[in-house]
Length: 435
Image (cartoon, rainbow, N blue to C red; front, side, top):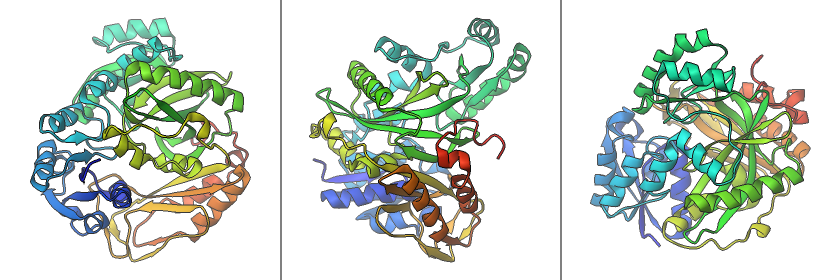
């Protein structure tokens, strides 16, 4: 087991990982930008080190500075959290070259799976139903030709995209001709890779993802599915597990497919396979996320499995102890993402409590919310024996949560969970279109 881990991230996920390290008896090192000097993760860690100015490019995205900080502090491993460098194969390779364990898949695995089009081919070969689409496109002419074959509407996607970014829905040839060059330029700017690919637009549908843990022996655990269909512009707002749209029979079939496919690609660690569930009840594989998901706490609350601790154990070569049949999938868990809509200082904070209520955050009274990073400032998660109870508990928790000093989306989240369509569990990816 590692004796010291550096957390290459900030905010609530850095706090979450530091707490896991403390419970495991592992020393932690926080890195921070000048803008984050007084934030919670720097206070909780055993050591902290500044890696640059506020700009993410000069701090949290600066792989060399982060690795240098790990070497300077004697950290044996680096946990990347999510976002920033968490799915960057060059960063994983740099860690490996410097004798530092990367808590995530190997650089080789990342290289194979980070190419979204290539990963679909691998999953298809492994036995998963895959959305019809293309590999990386050579240019507009190939895109037009392939779109005609697939049939409109199609989705134009950045090959190296993630987090719901780099996606366009294209309805006809004229629209594809109009946006292709812009999409290519935006992909290059955002991800350092201008490559694009096409896939069939399945609509209406629900966004279903399956959380897995895998060790070096090929043992794979499926920790149920999450429904992430409440989205605005491909950004998730509410997640829940299990999905109210997935029957026990569908779940059993999906788990079996995933557990058979993952060992074939040699994956080790925590990962998420994302699917679309169409109106006929069929699942279609979209992509695999090679990291901890923002919404991992939903799965933790439902199953009682600490994903962060098992990420660390898997990276240290420790075998998974639980068997698939030992994973409890009873009850219902819901998560609302709490986002800041303005910068400012937190002047008042009250966090809701009670049985099975969890608020993952880095907020403390007096902390400054800056405009430099992702606007998510916390995740409110509740668990109950039934979905109806969980919805009521979430409403109560949202009403009790107080964050003053910055504008937030608290009122919007309360409105959404009060919507009849959400209460009944009949929503899909169209839910936010008129809201």
